[in-house]
Amino acid sequence: MRIGEWALAKFPRTSIKQSLAEVSTYSKQQLEVATREVLGDPRRLQVMQDLVRSSIPWEDRRDGFAADMETISSLEENPLPLESVKCPTLIVHGSADDDVPYRVGVEAQKRIPGSRLHTMEGAHHILWLDDSIDDVNRMQTKLVRDHA
Image (tube, rainbow, N blue to C red; front, side, top):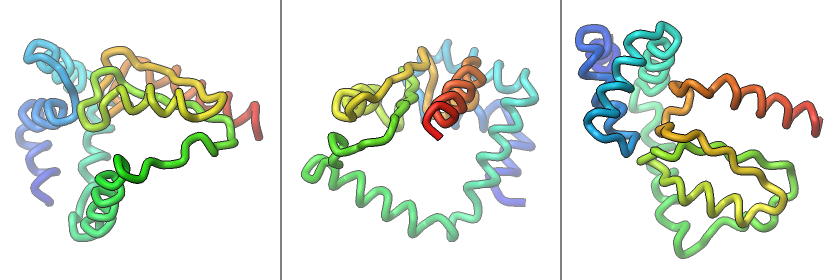
């Protein structure tokens, strides 16, 4: 068993709390509440387990991660040409995301013609753990159906 899976199995509260702390702007109290919510909901707990499994082995992801970091660091000097996006665009962003700040979603919405920003209030980077994810899934499905 890989270390992440082992830690989540043996120390679920600590593993989940640490993961959420890394991807959110939550206060200590908000972090406690979110950790309890994940632990108390089999569906959310499964999301965490699936995320851990999908991120290992690291060796399979290292090159892609390095490429992502290089691209992200170059964006200030070479921003993406978001104004040229022509397809219907739904931007979904959590207001408490600490990995990709909320302002990035707001800026993308301003630059992508006709795009729509759906804010998940209080949601962190792992959107699939939020209460409103079912609503988001319905919005995504509707967008595809409306434009397919």
